[in-house]
Image (cartoon, rainbow, N blue to C red):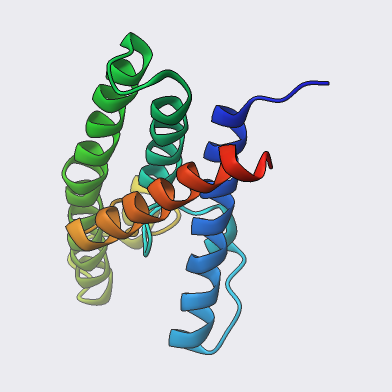
Length: 153
């Protein structure tokens, strides 16, 4: 029977992080948002939880001195750096561009047809993560990565 604890650990961590995002969104805004099930950004980082769970399972199975664990650590650092920096700042820029677009449209500075040609919809703003969101995702992933090989989920 097929059993790959690295894939299972990563998948369980991703699912748990997304479930927590939906739950926190429900508590904060008192409404269900379907986008939060698969959407990026928010608390906790599912990217961080996924790579940290996979890295933790690899560490438990092959040891911290294995080459594959080294690769997993490097990949995890790259993913978490990207989430906190590149994607986070892309979200900040999207928010500012949406404000500019709205102001131009409301003040009739530019023709509305021209503004709609730029983009029919507002840019997605929730793309990346704060350091706290990445840290919480990493902690969740490490915890799941410790549990998965023990429970043989």
